[in-house]
Length: 499
Ligand code: ZN
Picture (cartoon, rainbow, N blue to C red):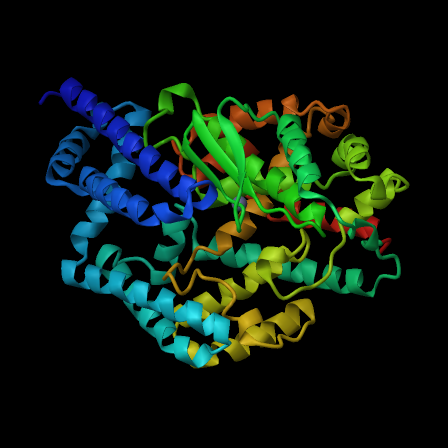
C-alpha cells in the first residue's frame, strides 16, 4: 500500500469504528432511558457481538499493520493524521508491552474488586474491600513498569487521563489551592451573612422541570436537531458523533436546582462534543481533548456562567413563571441561594467552592499509596483526618467516606485530579475571553453566542488534535496558572459572604 492508499484505509477504518461505537452507545443509552425491561438480555447479546468486532477493529492484526506502516512514514503525514495514528496506535503499543496473562488477570481483578466494592459500600464494610486496594495499586505499578519504565508510576497513571500532566504541576496546583482556599472556606463557615436556601425547598412538579430543561437547552444554544435529553438515575452526556449527542438528567421534586444545574453541566459537555470541526467527524479526534478539558467546559457553563449574577438575572423570570413559590423572591436573593457553600461529605454533591477539597484529599491519598507511604489499612483514618483538616468535618462512616466513589475499585488511579483541573482551567479561560469584552453584559441579555464563539474558536473545533496541555496553553496564551481560579473563587465568595 502506498501512503495515499494507507490514508484511505485509515479513514475507512475510523468510520467503521465510529459506526460500531455509535451502535453500541445507542443500545446502552436506550437501555438506561427507554428500553422495556424484558430487553436486557437481547441488548446484552447484541452489545457483546458489536463490542467484539469493535475490539478487533482497534487491536486486530490488520489494524496493527496499517498503523505501523503509517507510523513508519510519519514525517509525511499532516498534523491531524499524525495525531490520529499516534492516538490509535498508543493503546496498541502499550498492550504489546504487557504480558497477556497479566493483562487478563488484571481485568479479572478489576471485575471482582468492583463487585466487592458495591457490597462493601452498601454494608459499610471497608475491611472486605481493603485487600483489593493494595492489589490494584501493586498491579497498576507493575503495568506502569512494563509500559513506561522510565516514568514514575503515579505520573504514568495521571498521563493516562491527562496527557502531559506531571506530578510537579499537580503538586503546585493543589498547594496553591490548599494555601489560599482552606482559610477562605473557614471564613465562609464563620460568616454571619449566609444565604437563605430555604426558598429553594418547595415542591417542583417534574413536568414543570421538564419545561425548564428545554428552556435551558435553548438558552445554551444546543442544536435540538442533533441533541436530545432523557432521564436517568445519574445524569450523563454521550456524544456518539458530533452529529448525535444525548444528555440526561435526574429530577427531584423537592430540589429543582439539582436538575437545573445537571442540565447546564451536561449541556456544556454536549455543546463541546457537537462543536468539533466537521472534518474530524467519525475520527478518533472527535470526542474532546481530555477528561479535564471536558470538565472545564461543563463546569464553566454550570458554575462560572450558570451561577453568575447575569445568568440568574436572565433565567429568573422563567423560574418565577414555572414555580409560583419563587414569585416574591428577588434576583439577588435567588443568586445568593444558588451559590450557598458549606463543607460536606459527598464529592458529587459538593458546591463550587468546596468541590476541589474532595479532589485534593483523593490526590494526596493516591500519591501516598503509590509512594508506599500508606497502605489500605491506613486509608480510612487518613481520609477522615484530611476531611477534618481541609473541610473541618467529621466523617461518620466509611460509606460516606473512603467507600463513596467507584474510581479506585475500578483501578482508576490518577483520574480524580482531572475534575479539579477542569474547574481551574475554566477560570483562566474566563479571564482570557473576558479580556476584550464584557461577556456577562451579553449573557444578561440572553446572548451566549460570544461565549460559544470564543470556545468554538479556541477549544471545541480542535477535538483531540492537541494534547490538553498544548490546547490549554494556546487558549490561555500562557501556561496554566492556578491563581486565576483562586482569585475567581476568592472574589466571588468574599462578596457573597461579606468577608
Ligand atoms: Zn461532567
